[in-house]
Image (cartoon, rainbow, N blue to C red; front, side, top):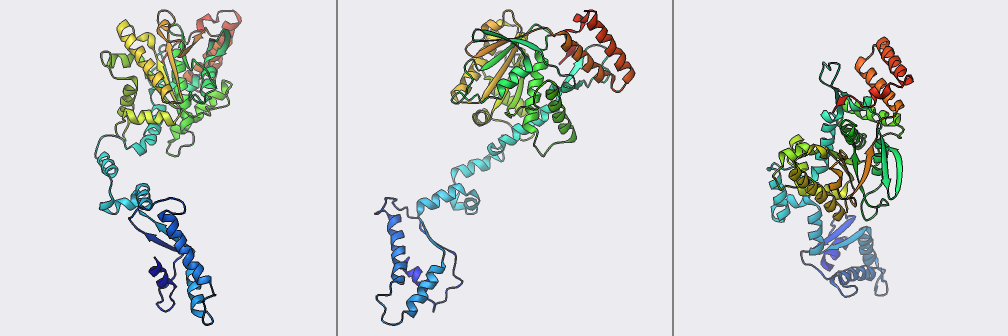
Length: 434
């Protein structure tokens, strides 16, 4: 090191231009012990070298040569020393440098290269995979409803946000019964951080939405998933005009229902049809999370999704899982197996400190009793109020009749007449399928 410094300081040898940074590198790891370790000893030797050039007490002449050397050395802004440990750390962090020299390749590099020729999505692109999944499902069948009656000729249905209404629910928190609106109540719960280590929401953390057949459980489950998908994607740049229209439509629907717009907590949302899950995995021991990973893989063009990567994502990003239709799993043995998988999912998520909200839907009799009350809070759907039924009727009329102002006005007047004569029970249960 001293010889190298002397060469840079010697104006006769003219090693120019002088660098701003002079770095000494060795593959020998040095001890970091303060004062006596290799790092501190070398640092002190460099400081002593510069101090010697500043010392004029030994000058036998006017010091011109010493001053010239000092001027050149002090023109170098930083003199650094990297030992073997420092080099190893930098190579581990800078894979671009490491990959430029085959001798520096690590086992991790080889495994990463193997992943490029496998069917699995690259781990560093997993967030992109899930965002793409949200984009796909935003425009899929879950974002639409289909009317059973009046000959839905197109078969395309209508965007669910165009006919969205909130449904009344009764909640029991502790010993207190409350009347709330389902969508508002669940979205408000989802705005809190639900990581068990920091959550202000006590147990039970998750929700089960209980309602009779046709009361709107599936519609609410789709609205929830769509609301969070729209929230996750609202600032994305890789969206089509239809994506943007769906996001804006959902935001407008939530404002119409009294919310401030899309959820602030941008949960990645996934809806699971439990009847389909039970049919495909009735005798299989695979976990619910493995089924979810398979469903994402089926929709993805970026490669298959590993369960371990999905678990890692859940630990780092807020999630919403809507498990719809436990009551549709009618075989007792299969239903018990499904419930075991649900319990495994929520318990593993709690153990991993995941910010996960699970909403499960079922009918009241004979199904809810199998759910652990320490994990799931029960919320019961009630019948529509007259004003809500009227609102739903007017929304569906506008959607079905498009821009036919005269017919829309005629149907709307009849709905209001029915309300006035107390015959609105006809409209208290939406006639649509999801």
